[in-house]
Amino acid sequence: MKSIFYLQEAIGDCNFAGSNLFEVKIEDASLLDAYNDLCFRIIEADKEITKRATIDKYNIAVVEEILEMPEDLKLIKDRIFKEISNDTDGLNIKRVEGYIQKVGLDKKDYIIIDKNQLPKLEKIIGGKIEDNPIGDNARSFYCGLLDLTVVFRDKEMENANGLIFTEGQIIHEVAHGDGHSDNYLIFKNGQGKKITFAPKTGLYDSSLQTFFKNEFLEEAWADWHRGDYIEKFADDDYKKLIARAIKKNNFEMDDEFFYLTHLGRSVPVPIKYLNIAPDKSVAFTPNAFAAYALELICNENKELYSFIKQARRSPEKIKEVLEIINEITGGYYLNLVSGNK
Image 1 (cartoon, rainbow, N blue to C red):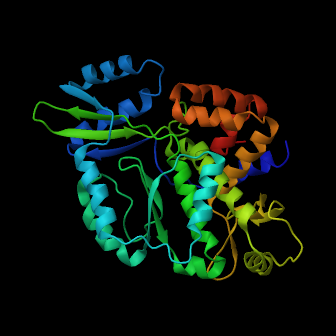
Image 2 (image 1 turned 120 degrees about the horizontal axis):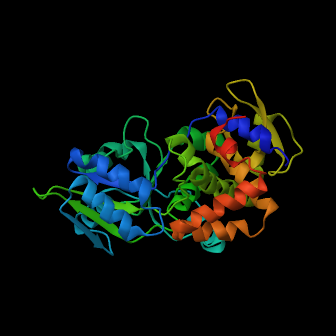
């Protein structure tokens, strides 16, 4: 298959960072093992048996399931919108929302903030959400617990790429929220301490036990939509910036650019997935390699995209998607996501 083996090697050069199948709020660290156990097992078809086994194993007194966001999380989300201004200045939000609607992604609440607002956001979320992704190296993220997309405006990247860079980040993070479940599960022990978690029905593969491997399909899905948005809406000004970066005037956004990874491999990736770094050099995130791999695979099976959307909403269908991908790649799926030859 075109380029797939090059991409497999490139993916092996990279590390993924993103959200797991579940976002978690932990008030009792002693329950973390139970949480992790359920994360790996809840994807099984019989959720009730899975929950029961976890309760018995860890002697958890109660599991409560609620069908809407808990009140304490609603208050956090409300505070974010009340206390932090939504910085959409110059962005084509109408176009962004039109794209989201046209491709059928779930519409998500989102807030776009300048990084100087980070201290305020961190104060609101604080320690209330375990492992919250706010810090010195904060990046845009989708928070399943709050069902909220947070996009940071990176002025250096906007100066290098134009405002379409931030619009693409919105698309990427909203795509992570596609298929988010409204069910919240709450564990309580005998002392009333609890963990609250929200199944974020993404493309998590329970057969692959490392963080890197679990992120492959999820990040591929999100960045595929970002690249598609960039391809559709790149204007002449943006294309001039691209031309200077790749040192080529005549190109289409879907043309392949051979990118040299840090291990010295020359890997073809479409121009629509690239970013221009502040120093005007070409940059790809690891997500771009995964996105292109998934794009190539879907080109071999035109129905796979709709199957993936179903799998995001119904975890038991993930196995079916993986089987399709494995068949298309000639049994190469495990090597593709792990980077092994």
